[in-house]
Length: 428
Image (cartoon, rainbow, N blue to C red; front, side, top):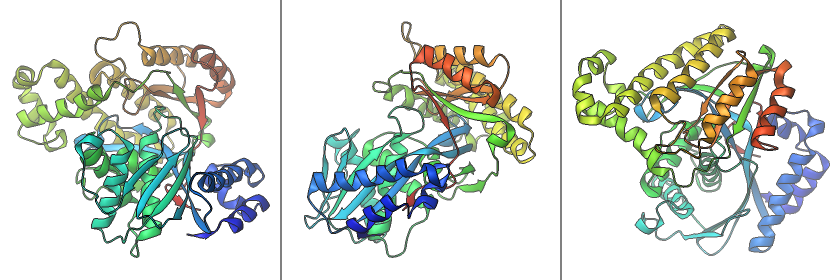
């Protein structure tokens, strides 16, 4: 929704949006001035970067936390995930250049012409590819695209495991949907557009969970049995009422050179499925996989077989986690979280990159967290793995000590205490 820049600034500074911001950031209205200041800052950044604009829109897309189903999404499985109260925000305004110009704080300016939106091989693995892909997806859905300037600021740490890439894709989708679609697309379709751009234009074979959790919001369980029409259900739960804090632990490991590690997981799972007569593991009954195990080992190797064991087990665990949460059985839920963590490390093998000896940051992070939890709560690798973050559910009475101990090991600010945000991609 476009509004004059001066009106936005006056409303933000006067607290007119305090209730809206309190809902988005899971805080009291009197705690929202810092968030209002972030939105004022992106308005200032928009004009400082591109020149003055008469009007602008304000937008937000949250990070996400994967709660259950580690790497199950790309095998058309089940996941449990939620949006969190750290986000990527933007101010957007029209330009007359027929270009999409995007300035993210701390990064180079990205510019694409809107007259040629075909995929470009030389743009793979770049932000330009995501922008071009999303614009093409909206064009195919009837968007009348025209020039747009976008200024983005984020407090979603890059490589943090709460999926800054998905938040970026959802944010761009929310902006394009608001500015150019007469018949708005749904949050589910915005997520699918982001995944398509990442798969086809960026060149990364990602699943759909990250985008879906950021776009739809709150805690949801998703069944990707039909990925074109995923089944999304809300899961009503308040971890704080159960005496649990959600912590995301930054292992300080770098994602940068790990694309091949990530890509190998779905590739190996699909290879096993192919031996068993399917495209993905969801197509193959577990009993068929067991019957074909010798052939799978011979054709795909043992790591692929172990990864398939994880996918089947974690897929079943999601349904059990959802049932436990809906029944308020947090002991069972935490046991299942820990089981998932063990399975990811031992079978999926996405905690330590293959061959790494000196650098095993994720392993150290999980080991230290388990030590300080001392049998309480739960901890597991979070998201894609190999680098990034671990997730811990910490009893609130242990939180202060746990945070202090973990930050003594990982560094100050590396233990993020988060809340579940009730809304996904948003127009302010």
